[in-house]
Every structure is written in C-alpha cells, then in structure tokens.
Image 1: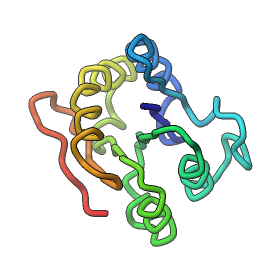
Image 2: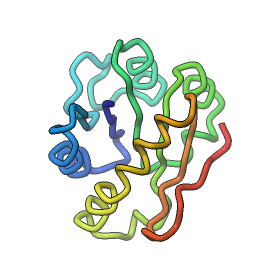
Image 3: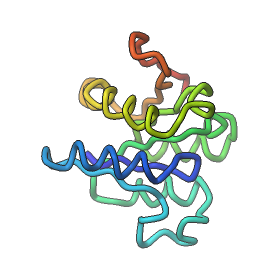
Image 4: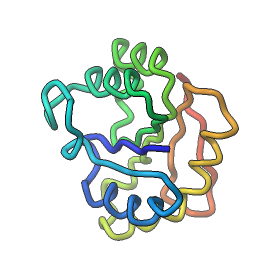
Length: 139
C-alpha cells in the first residue's frame, strides 16, 4: 500500500509514517516528493487524484482538508479513482506536528485494515482522540 499526503499536510507526516511502514513493503510520500505530477507540488486536487488513479500501484491518501468532499469535480474524481481517503479532523490544525505524526503511526493498523475490508472508494475522518474510531464520511 502506498500512502499519498497532499499539500494540506506536512511532509513530516509522510516521512515519519514511511519510516514506520516501509519494512512491511508499504510506502508513504508527500506530494512535494512525487515525480510525474503535471504541476509538481502545485498540482490541483483533481490532477493528483487522476495521477493516483492511473498508477498501477495501490494508493490511499491523507488530507488535512475536508473540502475535497464538497467540490463536485473533486468528489467525482475521487469516486472514479477508487481511492481510500483519510481526512484529518479539524483539531489536527492546532496540534503540534510531533503529536500528529505519532497519531498517524498509532492509527496506521486501523487505516490499513479499512483498506483491506472495504471496497474503494471510501472516505474516513481520522479523529484526534486515540480512543475514538475512524468515522466513515459520505462519498
């Protein structure tokens, strides 16, 4: 499984998660480090969604911006791309980077399990509290 982090997340999250999951054959990458995107780091959401859709690899994405579900073009692109998405709850914006990175590592098994149990596309909100389950979001 490959994990894509968009511009609404810190590159620290991708590198931290990658360090934790790469020994199991998974990888995490931030949009700034993806080669082949039409406009590099400045690619619009529909561009990176299409890039992941065309890839032969299995992808999930993590975003800090829940508005991706409100834009009709982005929402349609997500549905057609067949991706599993994870949106960080708004509370993450006020949380120190080291704590967010640790929560992502802590949540990794749950996120991976969702991708194995549910057929894509799916979207879930990642709550800030470790005791709270991931919440399914409407696609």
